[in-house]
Length: 97
Image 1: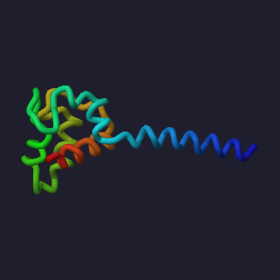
Image 2 (image 1 turned 60 degrees about the horizontal axis):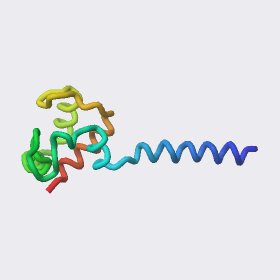
Image 3 (image 1 turned 135 degrees about the vertical axis):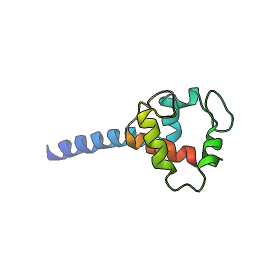
Image 4 (image 1 turned 60 degrees about the vertical axis):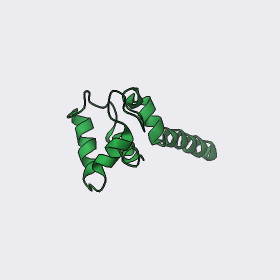
């Protein structure tokens, strides 16, 4: 009985962890970011490679962008994502080349 309970607990943790382990690219897609942005070409919004170039060397870039997305400042809509998701997506955007 204990082993079955432990097995179910571990299985539940794995499922929850898998949801949290969604890649940044998957998040950008599922949150709708790629409707207006692309990695290498301007769409409605700037290309992510251009955003990365703009903030290259700025140690505060991640925090600035996460805050702006949370508040909707400089962005047409507030991002419908958790802070952890925003951080993951912003790190990916800032790594674009």
